[in-house]
Image (cartoon, rainbow, N blue to C red; front, side, top):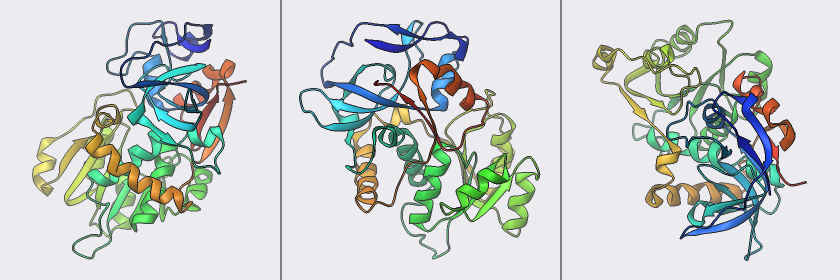
Length: 321
C-alpha cells in the first residue's frame, strides 16, 4: 500500500510517498481503510525529530484519519500515534468514533485531534461547567485561527466563555470572529500582553491556552488573573517553555500541561468528552474549519504551510485516490 514515510528526521523535505506493507493488528485494534488524514503541528515536529517518543525512521507519518472500518463497513474517524497517512491504519477501537452522516471524509479527518484537545483544554481549565461565581469565564487562545484555535472558539461559544485570541493577520481574525471570537489581537501590530491588560481593565484572563513555548509561557502567565492558569499543550516555537516561578506566587497562579497522546489512553477522560462532543455534533453545532486539502504527493507542501504558520484552520491530506 502507499504511505507517507518519514525517511529521516530533517523536516518536510524528508517526506516521501512509498510502498509499505499493510500494518499488523495488535490486540484491541481494527483495520481502517484511510480516505483522508488531518495534519497537526505534532506531525511537523515529528518530521524534524522534535516530538517525544518518535521511533527511528523510516516510519509512516500521521496520527489522525477518517475512513472505513474493515469488516464492519462503517465510516469512522480516529486517532493513532503513528501510521495514519497510509492506505490502511491499525487503530484501537476505543479511539475510533462514528462520522456524522452529513460530513465528508475531509471534515471527519479534521475533527478528532483538534476538537478533543480544545474540549479538554476547557475541561482542564474548569470551564465545562457554569462558573460558580456567576462571572463569565475569560480565556486567551493563542493561534486562534489554527485547527485547535477554531475548534476552541466554537466550543467556547457553546460554553458561554469570553474569548480573546491571537493571530498574525486581521483577515484570519475576521474569519474567526464569525465563529464567535469576541476579542481578536493581531500580535504583529500589538503586544498581546498589553492588549489583554487593557481589554480586561487590568484583571487578566482566567486561563491561557498556550502552544507556543519559549518566552510565551512566562508572558502568558502575566496575562492571567489571580488563581488563573496557563495550560501548555505544545511548543510551536521549538523552544522550551520559560517560566519565572515567582510569578506563580504573585497571583497564586498555575501552569499545567495537556498532552492528548497521554490523555487518549484514559477512557475515564475520553468517554465523557466524547459524550459531550457527540451531543453537540448531533445538534450540528460543531464543524471543522478546513483551510486547504492537499493530495498525498504534495504532503511536503502541506507540512511547510503549517510549519510557517500560514494556514487557516485545518490542513488535510487526501489519502485515497
